[in-house]
Image (cartoon, rainbow, N blue to C red; front, side):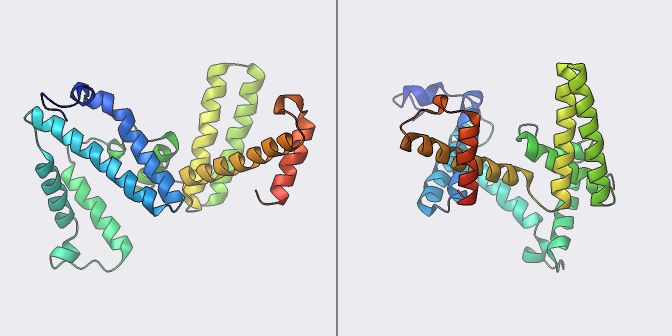
Length: 243
């Protein structure tokens, strides 16, 4: 497709132009997994694989590496990081495996100055906050118990309310970010993935809002013709019916 007689669109693509498609394909795969849509999972895995192949092709054209080297590299890495499978090292629990994995990554990435350097900057903000906090916690930078986290959240909420009074957009944004960051830490304490938690709430919001739309349509009305109180009645009804 990228050859002289290939597709004009494919020939024009660069790593930068392909980044949005790479991210989109990943999230479409996650949606298919969440929906337990096995045909969708199969299709989206293929789409994601295509992104890997085309990025590898770009590198081949630049004389850097090709798809075979990508496969060989990950194969060798998995062997190195699983000595309990491919060698004689004893790692009896999942915790032992994770600890060895992290130690091995540390050795492979000694050029990085901070343990936080290993967290990709392009991650969604909630996921990035979670991973950053996990890394900090591993070296002891963390609260001792959930009560301390809740106390910190109360403190951040008070600071957010103060910023609202001052009406400074920068301060409001900063304090809101602080609240979200502490809530991510709260999620980690409860062993809850904040990204998944928010996605579930978003899905719930969509179902309930769709219920309001259906209710308005059944009355022959538009949402813009309804009051907030009228929509709230339908919202509560949706909650009662577990929509």
